[in-house]
Image (cartoon, rainbow over all chains, first blue to last red; front, side, top):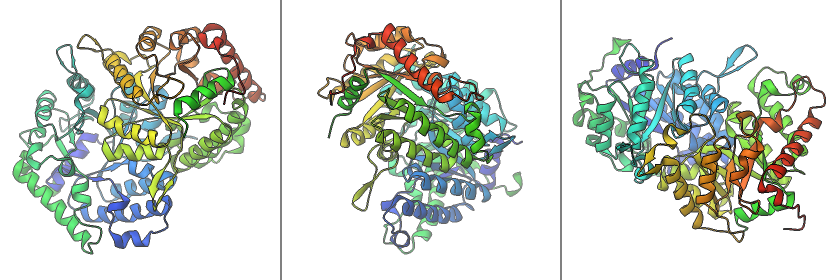
Length: 312
Length: 312
């Protein structure tokens, strides 16, 4: 069983970049030609449209990027049909060799957290075997409940070589309300970051990285630099590029000097670089993906990575 | 459109108690006779078993208690079929006149939070009308991301007379790791509690309570007393009774002197007061529900509530 961080590092080396495409489908932004084929006017039709759209996005980006992140909220908003779509999309992404992150920001205590975690990772144990549910490589987790509530996620992840990304300093403008409160001389988010470091060090891979990462928004480059400095062996998952206001250069502090250590997420910037009327939307998605990779390569230490097909 | 806290208060007066039955189905604890009817050995069969079990539980407890809380994790763990069950169960609970809380501890930013919130409450706007998904009366929300991330939940709730319960001091043994950190002279959970008070005061009902409540575990009676004192117009949702170790008397600080202001959740204690072999499990559930209500009435200010059928 390969360590999560080693699989992630291999995928980054293989593609020569650390761009994560965020699958955040939104009905009102979908191409009109696609909406027209799923015009049932109910949530089941929207779920089918998301499935077609996400499938085509995966076909475009799979050769280019190492990681995708599926935003659970938009699939849950379509009810059970949307969650069937989420299953299919995650499976297709895996089949295309992508590392998959389920962005669901789950959190709960004890056996309830175990239920979330087993569903996210290898599956629910029943009648002597595991029954996969989301089967993602990694899950985002909210730390507010503390170590014993994070523990079931770590245990489940470690049974199957998966990873956990803990929210540390989120990308929203008001993230500081609680995360920046000074507690015993330093902001809350640094207390959380230090916990992430200690959890991550419990299980380092051959790559030197742990299986517990941290979510830190690109919209706060100063905090990003502080967390990068404090957590050298922790992968940072960095949202906020594009629609949320951060530029490629703002993600520079997320990387180690060797170009590793960060996964930079772009959702709307890569998914919807077109107006719904555009007939060439797939070409635009590919161009936006390539342009985002090029910007990151020229503006950040990610440019030090060389594509290396034989790494694995 | 009736205010959430007024509906909740009316339901508590109508039943004369503030017990919330937590629907946390667990396959290994279900009655054997019920498991035997759903022995497919896959998650779809488990989802059908949960639906039958929860339906029978609702039929038993609907005449006795004002509120139920469905734990999303156990339904999500069955995949799309489990989420269809969750929809059916929430609908049945509403049809039986129960106030419904979806315990999903959701959290995200901006339009992603809106997607979670609209799904939890009145539904997703599409083609000129709302399409209900979970249609719960209230949702639990994790506050770590700050005000602008909580705001979409408040807006969506207020459009349809629903409520939000913010995690303040959770019931797990390690809750204090971050929640008790001293920030500017007082613990983090009190900063969150003060935010809850200010959000709650934005929209008070005729009952004098707001539509933003706080989750505070019964396993920490001292913190419960502090929060009760600081937030007189806020409903407290109190987990931790029974299997987690708290006794009825431990919930005393959650109540105001008039017996209002608290909802006391019991999950395993009421759902599974039997061994799987028991043939009289439904009678045992009813007896456990009545015994829990009686203990709360004799040990806490809840005893000051009188059943008042005509309140609404």
